[in-house]
Length: 271
Ligand SMILES: NC(=O)c1ccc[n+]([C@@H]2O[C@H](COP(=O)([O-])OP(=O)(O)OC[C@H]3O[C@@H](n4cnc5c(N)ncnc54)[C@H](O)[C@@H]3O)[C@@H](O)[C@H]2O)c1
Image (cartoon, rainbow, N blue to C red):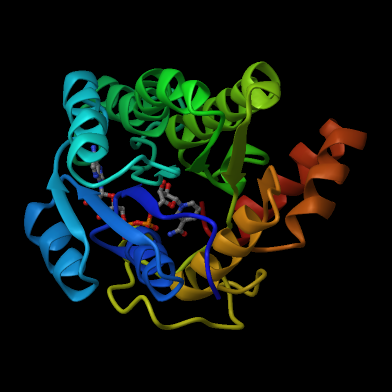
């Protein structure tokens, strides 16, 4: 299809959902700007799509400011910016508030989740909004997670920061929607990417998260198609796994019951 978007920036575009998103946008005739902390991956994706690669940390404010200025000066006005880069590390050995364990110290993990899963979105919006508003509109999207509506078992920092990402997207839409800014936030459950230990992002399965029989794992391509279609329809909350709506409704209607159910689920998956 012919896209109304001419130039799109995707952070975390070197792998997984971001890479699939760049591919789908390219198929639709969009100029893809692939941004990733992994310089080689960004370059590989961009060169396969006739796009542009930028190696940077999406949570570094000045680097994001420079990126936006450079893209707009040299490539074109950014019609769509997708803050997709994200990180998660899991709780330490002592659980949700634990101090040690894992590959990083706990405060480090919280800090990294906060910076990449939330502040990266704030910095992108901070430098895009004045430009987009001045030209009458633009699209800002972010990839949060179903963990931002429900919870990620055994990853408190991921859950808390993904909730913050959803709340930030809501604030953007409420504050700037009437200035022509469209906002979407994407909340998938499991997607076949390196984040859940799957290198081949073309696979999808009817099975479930961690081999459990829950809702299935979507391919990165399925999720990218869902995101782009949602953006064309200007949908605020994009849910690649539609059953998440029911879970959110159940959580809202009886939180105690929902917590008990999550405890049971955590036991079942060996958490
Ligand atoms: N895979 C899942 O099951 C799943 C489910 C829900 C939400 N998500 C979210 O989807 C998004 C994409 O993750 P994915 O599953 O494709 O994982 P992925 O690990 O395949 O891709 C993440 C990409 O982000 C890049 N990145 C990480 N930190 C960065 C930084 N500071 N600056 C720039 N780039 C950075 C990585 O190099 C990588 O290319 C994340 O926000 C993740 O939280 C993933």
